[in-house]
Image (cartoon, rainbow over all chains, first blue to last red; front, side):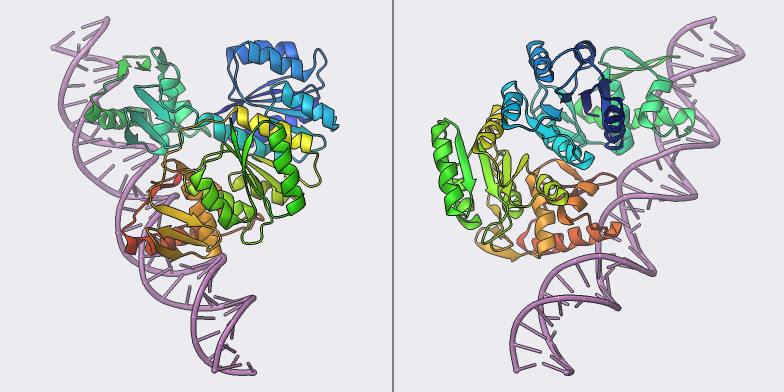
Length: 218
Length: 218
DNA sequence: CCCTTACAGTCAGGTTGTCGTCAGTCGACT
DNA sequence: AGTCGACTGACGACAACCTGACTGTAAGGG
């Protein structure tokens, strides 16, 4: 669910990071230069950033500043070969949140990313109205919470990810049933029904059917 | 003015930290043992914590769990002489936010604290009445004390650290069994049961199961 | 030294929630 | 009216979880 933005020019390290993030169950946007990162992170806004300091077209700290200027407030973990004290200080003063010098263990990247994520994802206390809360594994409506099973959670998550737009049936199936499981066509209907039934007591009828296409949330 | 909570038993380092914090323009609560820290930080709630791992009366990670269980959500910077990868991972899995190994430059402490302070949020609900005491390795509810074994303590500590949110099974296993020990899947269930059984006589039924995901404390 | 006690981790058996499916019905569009 | 897609309620299978008991190990006391 959380989206990690990576900017690293060294191909070997880039692929290691990509695989590690996937193994952690995180989605990622991986880029190889500052210019590419600026464009990519503006479209899909990551929850946490992993930035190399030594990029071909810019200093990673400048990239950090540029991203912050663009309104992206995600925490930043700097990766670098330089371990001088002044380098570290410069990294933090550019708005970094953590700093790791090469060579490092991928396991340490993992736990430090988790620590950063812990602080950001829970920093969405109230957007009023109805919120899908991954920490509680539930849908929260004005302090009332509706527990969801894992499958219901994935399905509703995909639906709410594109509010007001129609999500096709096969897209929903792919999201709710990863690892390409084969499920009967009717299974999706069943789960939509189950979710609707849980929402009904709260006076919510937010899932509407678009016949022949899919469902939509609003 | 932000308040920094320090717990460090080595007098020399303690005074260095105290002076450095004052020079940074921060107020501080400085303690030398886990027991003292628990009392002091409950009265004046710090915005950031600096904890030594090797304390005389408890492990710093247990202190961190206990503070979190008490509803103190401030970010934690661990200080320690141990720089093994597993030690670092154990620190983060106990709920730490950063980890610095001795010897370190005071300037690095400074920038890392600043980074943590930048992201602090207030609003910490109190977990009325029930407290985890790392010095006694016990749960205290209105002057009634329930003894916990070390494993039970770590497990319950991790659970109470994120009140109302679901903690995944593998996260609990990682917190309760550091050093990457492999434990049977069912062992976690057993320990949850033991803790529930100890809480039951006090009228507490605060651990609920979220099937397929983990457990939660409320 | 043996005995006791406490803790850790595992096991087998029972219980229950979740999953995916089916058969039948409803309702919209042709 | 007929057809097709979605809705509905119920069901069996299975995995997740609960529960009580058991074994191994280490520390402390007589």
